[in-house]
Image (cartoon, rainbow, N blue to C red; front, side, top):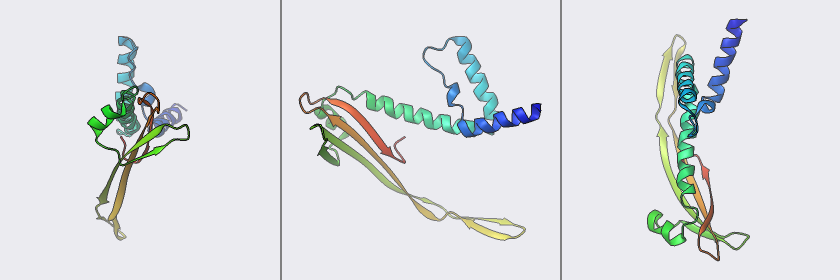
Length: 155
């Protein structure tokens, strides 16, 4: 029974990652130590796979913190740092939305795996990376009031 519980816990952590053990600003030293110890132990048990989602969470949080820092800034301040947007359009509420784009292509190289039954080739195809970041600027104050993003390479 104990083996089943441990196996189940490891499997669930591999699926969910260690994001629930992320360190918060208001954690005290004991809680922080416990979270770090737990992440290290589960990272070893899951061969590092539990950290994959946590790394994605950290990158996403960093991007969102950067975008949050622009709330209240003017459109001129934004374009002086980011350059001119690729596109702009009017939102249904009358505000202007600026769209910044980042597109690139990658390539998954082909490799061949040999086994007792022969050889299998994997990969060898292009990958399209895209990110769209939108800033909505209030029509009256000319200040950024919200942002959003979408794509597979924003963080």
